[in-house]
Length: 443
Ligand SMILES: NC(=O)c1ccc[n+]([C@@H]2O[C@H](COP(=O)([O-])OP(=O)(O)OC[C@H]3O[C@@H](n4cnc5c(N)ncnc54)[C@H](O)[C@@H]3O)[C@@H](O)[C@H]2O)c1
Image 1 (cartoon, rainbow, N blue to C red):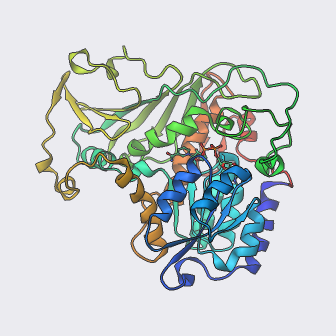
Image 2: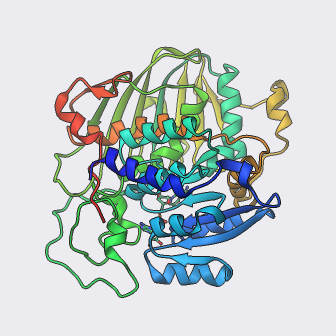
């Protein structure tokens, strides 16, 4: 089934649905449905249900073990293996939906829920395909839905501080950002051969969902390793890149890039490259020079000898992070829960936060993941209940995701500069356009 047809089918489900967003909330409490409750889904469930106005009403997972563990914590919730059944049967008992599945199921599940008028908290990256990200933002706008992408670090002290500092011009106009992670969610080997017995706790057909059918192989896809595989994940850039790009992207108020180049190995047709250097050029904004260069490094991580990345006193560069390079200095933002550090003329300079009213209003730095982590989720719940707004809604998340996914697609064309037309949502290089859209299997 083509993506468009799937969306139409999902829209059909809206007929059995009800009023959108917080207008339907019962007794001021939010009834939540969770799609994917193992791995990060278990964390999402914990954080959302820690809000005192939440009732966990429905749980869905294609792995019966993950489902049983979540049910133990929320015995009153109804359980399902198929999100379509859950949404169709529980529609009027659900106020908001949390999507924590592998990436290829983010859009199919979220669009189904959004077509029914449900607010959605969806894990990062927002989608597996560029066209899906645009569709999600459009639907959220049309239906005026509360939405949030699962980039919880967006709400952390240090990231908000870095945004304030950059936007106050602490290093002048920014000309370049370098960001890195040593994680390896790639796989350079050949596609696995043969098949393994599907474990009795797993519904493999539902796990594949809209993706093309293929044999099950133990430890290759579920859980977690799907990130390395073209049809399901988005490699390291799609995984860590979304978090590490987020603050510079937000702080510099960037739009999508004009050109993208990925220096990596030749495609194998199965896994993402294990080492990527992705160079983006963005149109300038009021915080940048006329255009902005952005370089992403994964696999071995950052080239620590690069002059932009050398730290005072020969200090070791943090394993993951971003460096803003401005006309008046550099700002290092380690990932994560560490203060940004200002470097001018090769030396650290003390950050005098008393000069920044907005920074002072944030109080003391917080170094507690438990309390910081929940903020982003509680912001979503509060917004669903009519209080405040989300800071990573799909209008923002779709642009950030599009940017990330363009770099992922560039990995199919090693060392070639691709040119992106944001209005037409097309590359000038016709051969790259086939990767913008997904073909959905009926399942
Ligand atoms: N924000 C963060 O810090 C963070 C951290 C880790 C993962 N993530 C994101 O969370 C998502 C899940 O990653 P993970 O590491 O937990 O993966 P995982 O494979 O460990 O877990 C995914 C869970 O979803 C279930 N699932 C798969 N397909 C499903 C379907 N169609 N319907 C219902 N359940 C389904 C699986 O059985 C499993 O329980 C990804 O999008 C990932 O990028 C975010």
